[in-house]
Structures are given as C-alpha cells and as structure tokens.
Image (cartoon, rainbow, N blue to C red; front, side, top):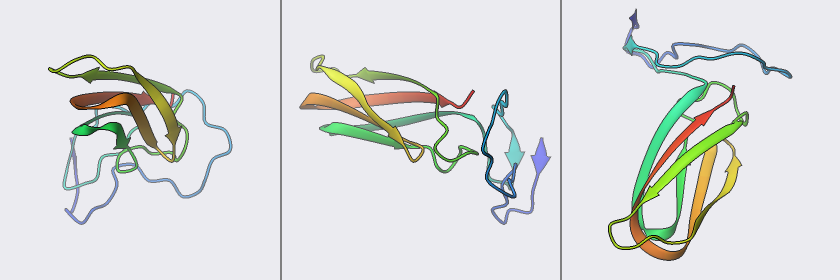
Length: 111
C-alpha cells in the first residue's frame, strides 16, 4: 500500500504527453491519502432519462486513450433499445430510445 500526505497527490504522475503508449497496465492500486490513477477503470451511474454519461477523468492516467468499453444496462421496468454512443474526453455516453430508471455499469481500459 502507498501512503501519501492526504494533500491530493496522484499515486502516478506524468510529466508530459506521450505520442505512443503501448503495453501499460495500471489497475487495482491501493493507496491511503493519495489520488488513485489507472489505465483500467470501472464506473456506475443511474437515473430516469434517455442518456447516461460516466466520467473517468478522475482516475484514468492518459487523456483520450480509451480503447475498450464494456457496459451493462439494467432496468426493473423493461428492456429498452440502447447503444454506446460516444467515447471521448475520458467519458462514455450510453443512450436509449425511451426514458427509464436504469443502472449503467461501465468498464474501460487503455490496453
């Protein structure tokens, strides 16, 4: 486990932008008093609407490098048509054809 000062220091820091990133995996970090950073992340959102966005900027180490997305959409009322609409800016957007109260679970990676 990494221990920090509790002042919001990232567990992994980058000094500059990279043009090519290959075979880097940072996942399941454990830290106390530090901000976790990773190349694999999981998120969740819920609500009664037609679109759901999950923002991974708080955890993903590299900007705009999501390569794989898996998501599941769960509703107790019915099962709407739904699709992954956009992946940009470390955000994932899922949309459906009707407004329903749903839970959306998303996993992304940059591998």
